[in-house]
Length: 413
Ligand code: NAP
Image (cartoon, rainbow, N blue to C red; front, side, top):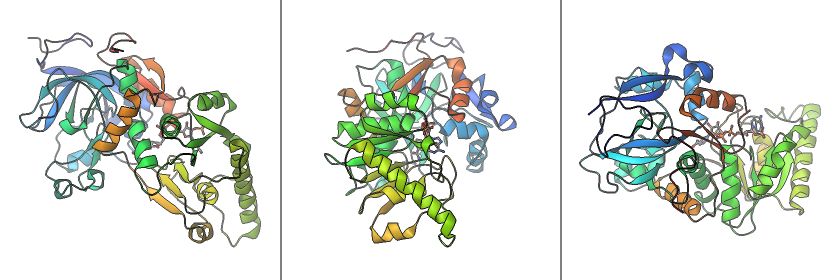
């Protein structure tokens, strides 16, 4: 038995080498992702009773590991050390397709040799909230796998909890299967997880960053469940992509200038300018839809730059649902539109097992496309994160080969 195998060299099924290849961030190189992520050889992790080791075939790239590289807003290494974990590195990666290679003694739901995708909802099995059967995404112990936990999918062997494993859609290649689930499961919870504000046939959904990872999944899910999405992008070159992935209409946000924190409502001139911009954006939305109907759901993640407009254009009784603040955390809104029109402002974070399984089923049935943008090699991991930070990445979800040697493998249609 070798201590270390080359990437793509497959040990006999179930044999776990002592060491493995991985992409890591260390605290002394926090900063631009192109320099922060480096390839190293580290010990293969051991697994707990409810955990599995996955031989990673392909991974996706997510914004959370841009944040991990920057070391902000959270130093994920320092946070874990405070909780008693010994590692002085972050081996990230929150999207994964692969083969179950080892299972802990309590694992009943998957077995060695199963082909799976991994969703990134992680929680302590002994958390009283989880044990009570309530939504585990609301438990105190919940973390995002491959961001707040170590040994994610940029490792030759990843460590996950067994409940995170979802059967791999057979029709997908390794890279298609490995690129989508973090964004798809997050989008699914945002659009279908907060009743009564769930998409029903004909409902209008406004999707920010619609050619991005989350946005593309929101377009696909909205179409799959019978809604109509209006996509927002910053470049006309992205319009065709959005229409191809289900958008009923597209708005180019670069034609407007009222972005950022909402001005003081007592400053009549500044507020008036802002309101003019927000109204013009609302009109552009109706024009794109071809009907004077406002969105029942606004799919938010830019945050500070766009939230005032999101609340303004949301339909009476509708919901603005938000999972990030990429442009800043200072949320402002004109409360008059919020209460008089009885809107809902809902935070949302990742997904639970059922939501991850539900969206993976839509993918397996061919109703939702995983929107694989481009397939990269393992050593492109730093560059992919840099592209994402600079908003220069290809539309949809990037895939990265880990143990898969060439693109196009793994599908059995
Ligand atoms: P992404 O692929 O980079 O897409 C984000 C999109 O936002 C970009 O395509 C860009 O599109 C748009 N954008 C950038 N600046 C903007 C601005 N000033 N105003 C409006 N739109 C702007 O990233 P992603 O994977 O979709 O992730 C987006 C955010 O969600 C990240 O902060 C990520 O960490 C977070 N996230 C959170 C969760 C969760 O569970 N909480 C899960 C997944 C992702 P245009 O330039 O074309 O408008």
